[in-house]
Amino acid sequence: MLDDLQYRILRKISPGVPPATVDGASCEGRPKVGVLLGDDFLKMIQDKTVIDFGCGEGAEALDIARHGAKKVIGLDIRPQALERARGRAIAAGLDDRCEFSTSTNTKAEVILSLDAFEHFADPAAILDIMHSLLDPTGCVIVSFGPTWYHPLGGHLFSVFPWAHLIFSEPALLRWRADLRNDGAKNSAKWTAVSTR
Image 1 (cartoon, rainbow, N blue to C red):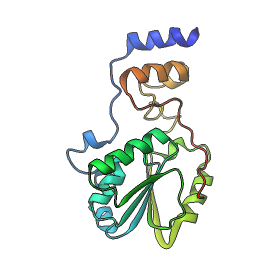
Image 2 (cartoon, rainbow, N blue to C red; image 1 turned 180 degrees about the horizontal axis):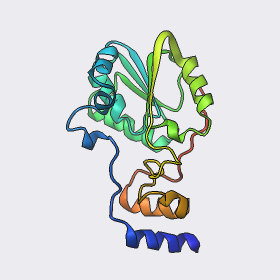
Image 3 (tube, rainbow, N blue to C red; image 1 turned 60 degrees about the vertical axis):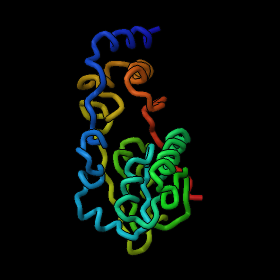
Image 4 (cartoon, helix red, strand yellow; image 1 turned 90 degrees about the horizontal axis):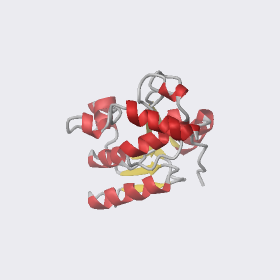
């Protein structure tokens, strides 16, 4: 009942779609990884195996493949996101170099995690998994968006500053579902995925 009231209030006061973080639409045709990490990153991944940890629907994984990675493994816990990523790889003709799964045993020279760490319930466990998947000469690159205690509450809940502390998660998710159709069902706190 209270969630429903909060949802109706959100619908009334909402300015519309929350402002975008750095995504494909705001990068003016350049890959998000290039915008965030620079052209040196795009050179570094040439002929390398790269794991995109928290790959979502695969946009960055596909960009990494387009920019010369030998193999890209996108990891995520959401089956629907992985299915969309596989479809995008097929449509882009990159399915021979892109693999999407909930786990892997493959070692990588580069492990990348963009805008995912703020969702991990146990970041230390995720770092342990990354370490187990990292080639001895490899590197891990992590970038993350606003955390839960940021005024905008992360990239899932950005109606206005601190809204995530005023409104319930069910009300915010219902409001968000009206604006974005990405299947978010909660604040997406990940648990450590298996590497087996």
